Image (cartoon, rainbow, N blue to C red; front, top):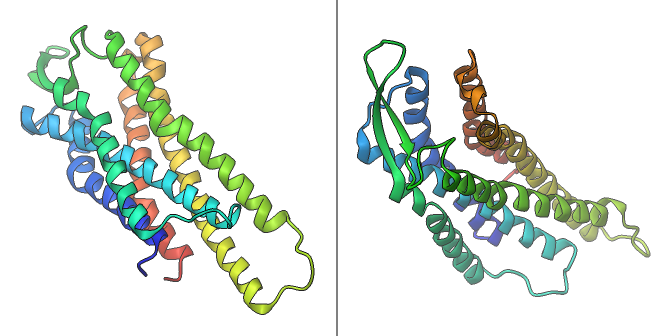
Length: 256
C-alpha cells in the first residue's frame, strides 16, 4: 500500500479532511444566516485554511498526473520515488501556504446594517486599496488563484490524461500480449479511469465558484440581484461537495 500514488492519495484526503473540518460548516452557517458568528481570529483562520487546502488538493492532483504520465507514456524515464514523493508533498504544502498568505494579512470582520435590520458581521478580506469588488488587488489575487489552482492545472491534466488514454486505448502492440502484460494494462487503465473521474469532478465543482468572483468584479450590480445569495450558496455547495465526492470515487473505483 505504500506506493507513490497512495502517498499522494493520502495527502489529497488530508486536504479534503481539513477543508471539511475547519471550513465547510462555518462558511455554510455564515452564508445561510448572512452573519459571521465566529470572531475575527477564526475569520482569518477560515479564509487561510480554505485557500491552503484547495491549493494543496489541486497541486496533489497535478503530482498524481505527472506520476501516472511518466509511468504510462514515458516508462523509460526515471519514476518518482517514495522519497521524492514525500519531498513533493512538502513542496505542495509550502507553496499552498505561500499562496494563502494574503488571507493572513487582510482577512478581517466588518459590522454593518442591512435593510434596517440589526447589525450583521461579515468575514471578508480588506485590502489596502479597499474591499472586494472595489479592490484591484483583490481582483488580481482572484485571477492568480484562478490561474494557479484551476485553469493551468486543469489544462495540463487534461492534456496528460488525453495522452495516457491514447497510449492505453489507442496504441497497437506488436506481437501477442502475455497474460501478465494484459493484466498490467488493465490495472493501468483502471487507475487512469479513476483519476480522470477525480479531475473531471474537480473541474465541474470548482468552475462556477471561480467564475462567480471574476464575473461579479466586472458586473457589480449582479451582487445586488434578488437571488444572488442563493446562487452563490449553490456554487459554494458544489465546490465543497468535491471534498465529499473524492472518497466515494476512491472507494468505488479502487479495489484497494
